[in-house]
Image (tube, rainbow over all chains, first blue to last red; front, side, top):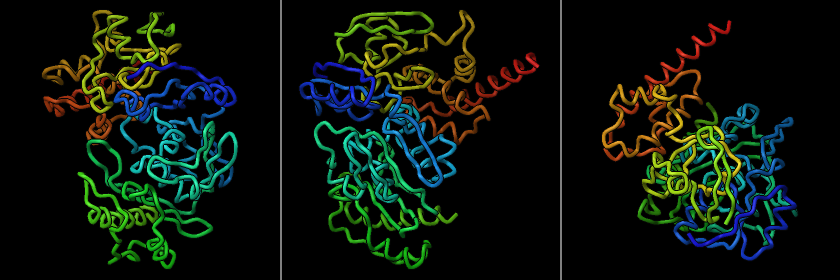
Length: 265
Length: 166
């Protein structure tokens, strides 16, 4: 790891100020950033630690509205009793990120700011039609995830929370790489008052995306059977040492079916 | 450089380290606590698991300065004098180690797992929750046995304490 200057932010305003120093980066759980710094893939001059900022912590559920602070860990999302009632699919998804030690540190804000093409949260937030709240504005998930490790975040912008309306039904299923525990394919299905939304992670050449054809089939009938015989095109899907694009295409249909079955269970 | 002060195994300690110093290196090199191991150095293997503010985390994926002000427990802090912690005793009794390299991380992860499941553990849960700890001797079978046995012992201990209190 190259030399770095560490700063612990006391508030979001404080973090925004500190972020102006040199080539600073925000540090939340550090589950991606620290390994990237160790391998020198990332070399920020300064780190601004957000993990102790109280206003960024915790899950709030008010009626159907769920708000999750950006520095809330996967462990805290997975074990939040109110969330387990309002949107059990998201709590369950968080309980299967990485391993227990990673879930104690990794945060929802860190995951979506990084936008790894195989991360789980981008699929969840896109399917839940969530809003990403920053210290400057609110951005719809559909406009937030813009490509591989790319988001709509501008310089100096800090994610403070994520908010969404709890869906009537939802579930997430993923086919995990057993070594990295990232999704080779993960599919989040959600049936809300504005219809069915299906988001796919781990597969797209350009990161997380919505599958309009699965959404159309599930809008007609929200059942696993509605996806029988569905062929997903391998166009624009990733091909790597873990899986070919064709294999991923097949997995999308399989994971979508499993997710719908789980959502209806 | 930063001044780092934290509580390690019940003792207040402080030192100066570069901001890029990993917590595991601070423990091993500045404090001489070499029970915590560096296995993979890529957050996969869990040999470096310690407890920071009561949570089992990988100390190779955390800066020492991030932990400043925290309460840290390492494998050296588990035993009560000559009396092994129930998880340590169970690893000994059930031969939950071969070469022993992964053992400190396994035991710290297991202690956290048992604390997180006061309702008790079953084999499937133990195996699932051990996914962040790798044993290259592949001695998982006895590790799982040891954790299940320790979970029983600790639950009995807790019941006894509750009875005495009642």
